[in-house]
Image 1 (cartoon, rainbow, N blue to C red):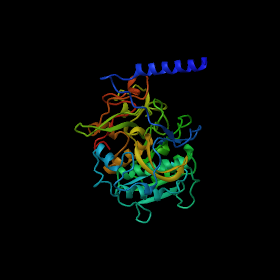
Image 2: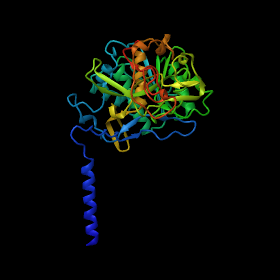
Image 3: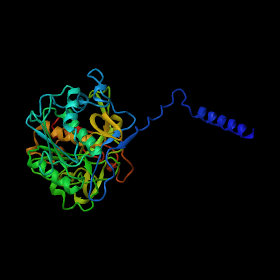
Image 4: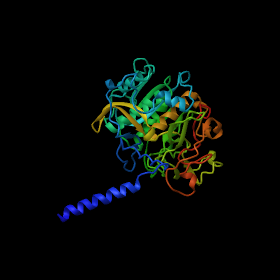
Length: 398
């Protein structure tokens, strides 16, 4: 009896507490919780990299036959990405090749790419029509790495973002034998020798021991982009490599403003100061607060809460089909593809956005943590760590 009375008293107390904490009329609505996500790839060991794809676990995968053109998959699609960044995707990009460098093999890459492009009414991009190529780091089309489901999801994300941003571009997928930085660097070299105009790298690892490795991500006449990471304030390699365009992340939402969209710094975007690489001359007047290389340089959508639609049929944690995915893994291939739209890689280098800031949307609010000086983790007018100089406003900065 005493236990029952105590239970009733406890329930009454909880009810009273709940009543006291209910929002009253006119009170601010509670902040929406962050979406449930999981990392597609495991944490990187020293000398290795992890992919940065973050998968929404609160949105179940939907099979290819579960949607139709009249039932669009969840997540941002090509029309939204092109609208948000004012891109000439329908008319530009022909003759340009965007390379995606990732580790391990995605056995369903071409078939999944076909599903994505068909769903959104994009032209076919296949091996048969010469638009799509898939090779190992040695250039082989048959001797490919072992399959890894996490990296397969990353590959699908990257291929889909190239398709969404530059549907007229050709796509080259180079699969490294393992996720070691040594093999990934070799794969980047392979992409450059095969004629890529821009190369995207949606992965990163520790800077330790990388001082002699940056040359793999340095290719004259080729725009090389890399994700800054998904763990908030802090840096990763190869985004910190001197010649790389380091790509941060934003939260992208529709708006009633003249642009039709609004962006804030994503809380997960990587940023900060390299401990290894010297400050490039282009950052001398950016007031980064770093005595060495600072990241990011530019940015694009990355927040899983405003994530992108991706199709991947290689099962990952029991899921396959349509996913909503975020992470700076999304922003790096988007920016690489904007370079393809600009068709300016031969004359371009990492300095170009710094001299063309008028063709970027400056992101001035949001943060990825607390730091000093504050511009390394808090968005502001001009350069800041999470978003760099801003996001594409057309192709003029690329």
